[in-house]
Amino acid sequence: KLYDGIFSYALIHLLDKNEREKFIRDCHNQLKPGGSMLFSFISKNDPMYGSGRELSKDRFEMTSGVNLFFYDSDSIRQEFGNYGLPDFSEIDEPVKFMPHHPPMKFTIVKCKKTDIFTDINTDKLTKTELEFLEQIAAYLDRNGEISNYRARLLTGKSDNSVKKYFAKFVNTGILKMEGEKKGRKYLINRK
Image (cartoon, rainbow, N blue to C red; front, side, top):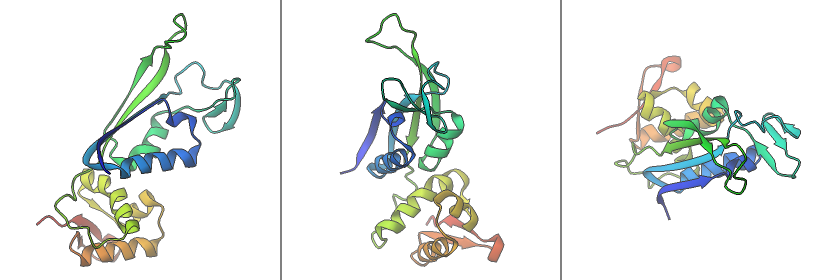
């Protein structure tokens, strides 16, 4: 089942890097085209940042045994950038069970799943090909074109895999190709 919107409150910062990546990807995959997902999580600007035992970059084990990852604008762009990241802002989140405690510094991130492929038949694509197409969709939506090199950076796929995907997308009419060899770009094939 696909959804118009997904909201995650104060959860993702409890996860490790691999769990966060999977959580964001899974949420994105459950959105309808044009759907939005909202996340709230703790910011590096919160006074707790740096407290406890450091587990990894910006991730700490608090004295209560809870592990927290603290986001900043770079980590937000890195983790959400391929998922239609249009907007994020910091908020003060009151601590309801501790009324005299200062508010926590949280960030709200809003991502929108691109709908640029809604008029394109993707029925003949494998799940892996569709996931690759969705990963590059936000970049295509913003920039109008994408190179093999940029697609490799965004998706982490090998040069051969990216070439294979692009060849299929061109052959099935989803994308069109412009340019030669190193100057080659791929664009949405709008009919």
